[in-house]
Image (tube, rainbow, N blue to C red; front, side, top):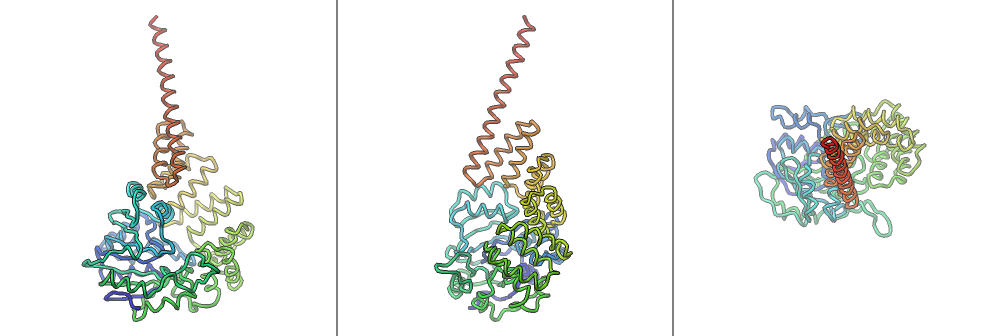
Amino acid sequence: MRPPGDSLYVMENHSTALRVWENHDVREALCVHLDAHLDIGWLSGESVRLAADREYSLAGLHERDCLLHTREGHYDIANWLGVALAAGMVSELFWVVPDEVWFNSSRQLQELLTRQIGQVSIASFAELGRHKSPYRFMTGKTEIVVCTLEQLPLLHTETLLLDIDLDYFARYRDLPGGRDWSEPSVDPADVITELRARVPHADVTTVSLSWHGGYLPYDLLPRVLPLCEGAETVQGGDVWSRQNSRGEGPYADYTRACGLLHRKRPAEAMPFARRAVRADPQVGAYHYAESVSASATGDLLRAAEARDLCLSSGTVDSAQVLNDFAGITARLGDLEDALLLQEKALVVDQVESPIISGNLMALYAQAGRWDRAKELAQLTVTRQPFCSEAFVVLATAAQHHGDRVNAVDMWEHAAECSVDVYQKASYRRRADRLRSNRRELNYVRMRRRWRATSCCGN
């Protein structure tokens, strides 16, 4: 079942593909990316600058450990493809989405972009909403085509990369009569046959296992490993090097908990997280998994206890963790402590995520501190130009300060960015109401001036 490609490499962390492509001096390539995730998240300005500097090796970019959360960095497995775009490695990208997670409408894809994807303009975001599949949008100067394997055209190009994440074969939906996560969602042999027909030649093929973090269920791994036969193994990443046993022990339990959380099954994740904590309570990430599982099942007291143990472990330095803990703290009604945690997340964050700044913005808006909320809304818009929530805060802050003109503009922007038709209509009504009130106010002022002038003239 060997996939097409002159050179075949296998790795655990998908971000390690960057090292392979750099070693092959890949430039301006077309990439076919089979994955349940797009892997183009937000990148800081510094990350983009370092990646684009041809005299600067990608080794100058620090990778984040997003599985045990022991350190922050410029990029990770969720945004490494953004680094490839910024570095000029990839000029065109086909994201081949498994049927298990396919988007039945462009709105579903737009909603994903608001949660996970950076560097998309308002114009490209809005244009996407007018298309049927295969979907297309622009990230910077790169066109992203989102399609199923059956929609992938026959590709002949000078430089072509084939990139496969084995979580492409994982199940994300319930099966009738029960859940068998060991069964692939599609026959791997059929996928390889289709790829050979549509991508007859690839200069470099990379395959990511993605077992760490539970993206690929452990029981499924033996069914898809034959795709890696004859591949050169590329090791890298903080997690890979420190784990001796893949199938048992607290780290394996933690990974299973993460996988169940990834599939929105927190009640099933809890026993694995608890067992990992009991086996090795010094690892903060295990407490984090327990805290998130407890929070998702409504047990906020246990979530808070695990949160405190995670923070006191001294082993976690992660904007994502602090962000999630701030949310738990806010749900417990402690807004000031939530603000402190979210401010720390903003300081630690090295990828300039609009989720981090946007959540802090929302907390300050909830506290009625509109000046700080406005600052964070402006920051969030620079990071994600189509964030309707940020424009709502800017509109509300403008109204709070009596700036009706700016408030109208911000409500219009919020309507333009919103993917919810009811919200879109609501924002436009607010803009129209303010515009109408402004006209009435101007009319009253004109009448007053006219009367004053008339009285003076008589």
